[in-house]
Image (cartoon, rainbow, N blue to C red; front, side, top):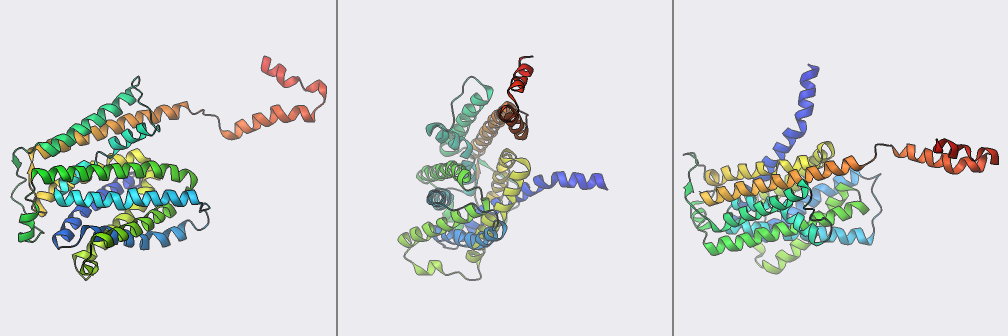
Length: 377
């Protein structure tokens, strides 16, 4: 019985990450259903961050009430940038790509994030192009493979792939037929929007890494990001969307989409991911991201009346391969850094320093040279 409990305990992070990816895949389905119902894309994003803020802010106040770091103007400005790039811009770009193309296409393009982050980190001087090591070569090759996959995904269509006879079309027939008659111009524009979303997310990751150094409170920083994201998204939606009926929520798919994406995805799943990162590290969490793509690729043709083409499948496989090559290179790099850290504990270093510096001041002159004789031996 004890062995069974240990196995279940060991599988808990894996099961939780599978649940996270299923939940993330559901976001694409709910987004499509809300847009098909006539809901504005900008209003969807605004409501998502409003619901997320309402959920995560009280949680941050409770969990981190005794260990929250002092707020500064620098941290406040960094949280604003996180809300701008990781919140409002990233989500608005992603939903526009989702509307112009398909759920599978947008999800596949989002897997370019590690490669885009690597390119921006090199441009900002946060990473180096180390061509002398296997890890450095892997990150470059993986990025190039991912970019090649994105090109195939955008410009190559190919034959249509049938995924069996099971179909559960959740979209209304009139809207569904029109929504997926995408042209080459729509695909190209959708690719640019997906790329804009990836760049925004990558900038958010870089800023978030700097912010967490000054403000190591994950729940509070997430609450601040959601707050700024909701404010910016509301302002943007009010400027673009003048139809006040778009803001009306009833007991329908619009309320369900806002609550699901805000509370479940941006709230509960953030807590779950934070726990998994704490238990197994960020690379463990990143490995599961293609699982969402597989689920969306299955849900698109069977539930959302989307068509899966050979070019989309090949491009998706290339992007996922590029993702894993970049992650492999990053893991090798992290292992090398960990090996360079000395095994001696900081307490041992402090005690040695005190012995060398303090003893001569406390003992007589005849004993001052004893430590030096020991070192010479």
